[in-house]
Amino acid sequence: MRAVRFLTKNSPIIVPVLAIVVLAIAWNVKELPLVAVILIALVLGGTVLAAVHHAEVIAHKVGEPFGSLILAVAVTVIEVALIITLVISGGPDAATLARDTVFAAVMITTNGIVGVSLLVGALRHRIVNFNAEGAGALLATVTALAVLTLVLPTFTSAPGQQFSPSQLAFVAVASLALYGLFVATQTRVHRDFFLPVTKAGKPVEPDEHAEAPTKRAALISLGLLIVALVSVVGLAKIESPSIEAGVVAVGFPPSFVGVVIALLVLLPESIAAIRAARADRIQTSLNLALGSAMASIGLTIPAIALASVFLAGPLVLGLGSTQIVLLLLTVVVSILTLAPGRATRLQGGVHLVLFGAFIFLSIAP
Image (cartoon, rainbow, N blue to C red):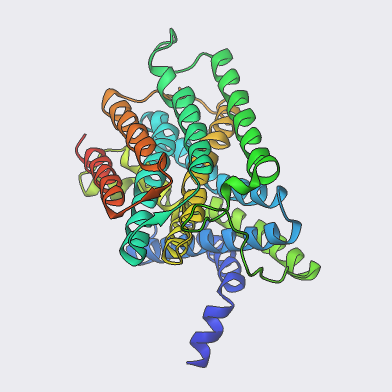
């Protein structure tokens, strides 16, 4: 029992070190046995969680708005690393991987995480309350980013659901500008819009604040964060053939690889959002869910746009007709859910049905 408690308590330190050791051992191995593939996948998942933990420690030390940026950048580095490593090894099927991953992130956050959070919160507290102004600002920014980056390429004059170089450059800059403007709004100008609210809808400051980590602890987390991110990039490169082979083996289309990546990257935010919902802090759940969607688009698309200069092959960002319909339906339902500033288990169930439709259509398009 003591050993288990020790490992659990120190897992954020142990896992990145273990990951870099596993990476060194498996780097030059051409064919890995199934057991090794499974173990590496488990280490990869644990390393993602450890990386986000250390990013949160650093964020707590430096405070806002830089803390939010550090966490978002750390998660985006993981997402971009997974996308690029799979693009390099994926061949022609990888042309749509960035689009599939970002769209999956939007659907997972706006329907999956929001739906579970609303359902969990409403089952425990009957009616959940949140700040409609803050939730609306989140949704408006996510919608603008999603349409600019994922819908417009389907309707521009550039062939093949792609942006021309100048269009891609404009969208990348616009995405960064929107994300930066939102961060300034959330952390400085209208911070009260994004605080948890009382039953009467009044914003409240958290009663308890965890003690800030020491400078030494923050520096240790910085070092372990770098180790974790390097490990994630390396382990993703090792696992990429197995991920693609596994998707094909179960009969799923290649685009489902993007769903797998998004699920992996968004796992920490999902756990945190559900915990906040159980504590009747739905505004925090919405901040995590929609904020993750915003970072996935606003930071990943510019990074992929820059990387596309050095990568061979096309970068297809435009959604198909089925995906556009799902996105439009999600936006409409989200507006109706968030506008009143309160919700019940019904709204949570509606979002989860949309999430189920997305998963089903990803498997059987």
